[in-house]
Image (cartoon, rainbow over all chains, first blue to last red):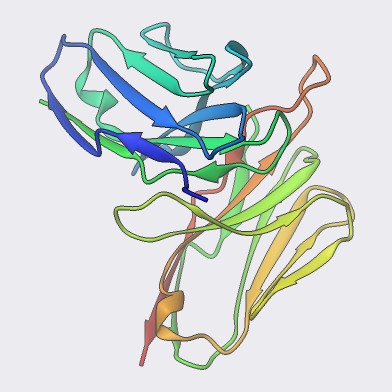
Length: 112
Length: 115
């Protein structure tokens, strides 16, 4: 069974731009969570989607948003990029809420 | 918010030695997970623990869910070069709505093995 896939793997943007990252969960998994990983803050939870609805949200500003499609694929969007948004963005999928999460390889975003 | 204290921050050991790392929290978690992350990759699940007191093994890895539900440890026996990487603990708690929160991660333990 294929694992979680994320596209693109690498991205360079400039301050003020916006970016959309994509995540395809493991087949049959209906929940998708997003995390931000930085050297200073470590891994931090952004949000979780299940059945196209946001079920959980971490402590990030409204510039960070996401959505989930009927096939469970998910996208996250960051608007008005700041230098501090440079990070590895990880997507994790699980069969359902409160189930074990499996991570994708991440998208490395560099904001210049 | 919840925080996990993971220690040690880094370990320099000889190949063949046993390794032990742990995580503690000031709040209760219902699930403890241990992940390993290699450079440029996402975390890979090693062991999942769902019940207080549970002791689970996965090959040379053994992890336990503390009785108080506020701590967990991971042991690696007879380390080999491919064990090099960053190990993360993660806890999942119940939120005020009765559902599960997103995972809370420790800062990681860097394991470096000298041949």
